[in-house]
Image 1 (cartoon, rainbow, N blue to C red):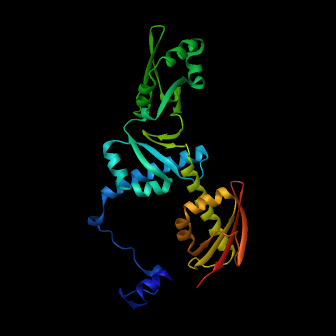
Image 2: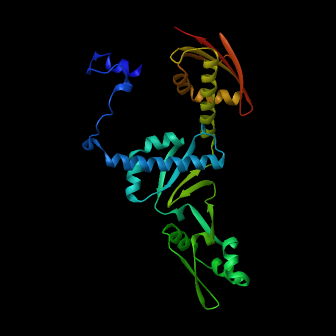
Image 3: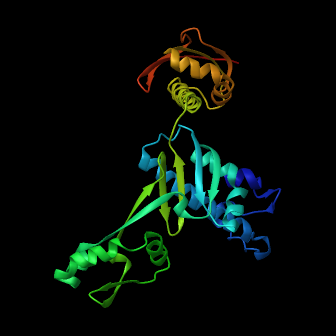
Length: 284
């Protein structure tokens, strides 16, 4: 159907075309149209978003709850690529600000411990000395060696030994108030502290989600305009008042009142344990 609408039948704007999209040939690619810089920038953006989303999931931070900032480990070149897609990244991660640091150590500290499962069979009774030697390693150097796939050396009783990455366990301790996700030298830290401004915006987004569901339950089309009347918990209504224009725009409300939740279709929901009454009337 989309194909037919685009080509206008057999003799539409594109000239004579096959009856079906399934009868057409794949277009020949034009290498001159390839934007390799954009590809690199999007890859950096995708990696940043994936790490940030993993951090949200790990911290159990609600997707609709805005966070103040994401701090990204990036080289100067990577920073320019990510900044080129900064609006997209802020939207995808639902954060207000992006900050950058050049080294993962600015976000986390590491501790190194021996992996007794792999080292025990190799060293047997010498494991206490091995554990002490591993404990004396510089964690930052160990991280660099593991990321570069280089062996790590220790000395036990005057004999040098080489350890592989699987022989060591790295534990990461993020900065207080942050959730950090790292992979292959890249890292994103999310600031988890929520002030009242962020909390109210998060509640407003939850209200939008609830109203959209109520629209669907009322059988409205996605383009239908509505008159919206809300009632309920004072804290919810405070957030609604602060973000009234945003809510109205998102739910296509041409009229917006807070008179208790009357309308042609009325629904009661709970948001974070607070009651919200949603009244919807379709408008012309």
